[in-house]
Length: 187
Image 1 (cartoon, rainbow, N blue to C red):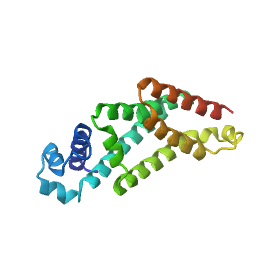
Image 2: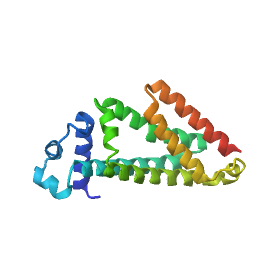
Image 3: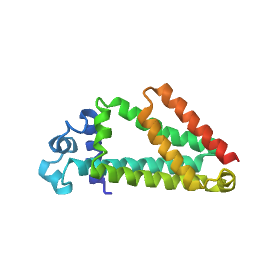
Image 4: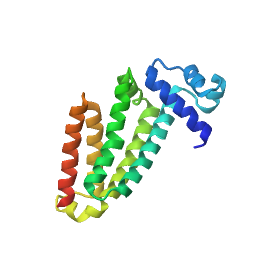
């Protein structure tokens, strides 16, 4: 992704967070990115495409941050703390700062948004499966594979993100997810 494309998507994500998906127009995105509407339309057919590309950019950044956190983690506990901070807490806080977070979540249900979310989930599941690979023997004692545990973590991450109403609820659910992973990987 080139720098100009990244600049456009960063501006778009900021506008979506500020106004919500429904209220944001292609004109708003173009203005925030310092482009004409025609120039924006030459790159993206519609607002759904911009949103999906923004989700892809956000995912790329999360995956890069997760890779770094996992490399730096001395224990599975440290890795799960990094996962929670990067993949769950940051998104929760970002959405809580948006005046219309439910609108942003709803926008992800468009065909383009669904495809971007599926790509995101696949990347994170694979990254988690790689993290859990050294624990294959312990996981087998529970009838699990690294990929199955990765799917469990990613699915529960999504549930936690959608169901937690407060930071205290979020933290409690993250602690339960972490405890589950630690118990399963320790055999």
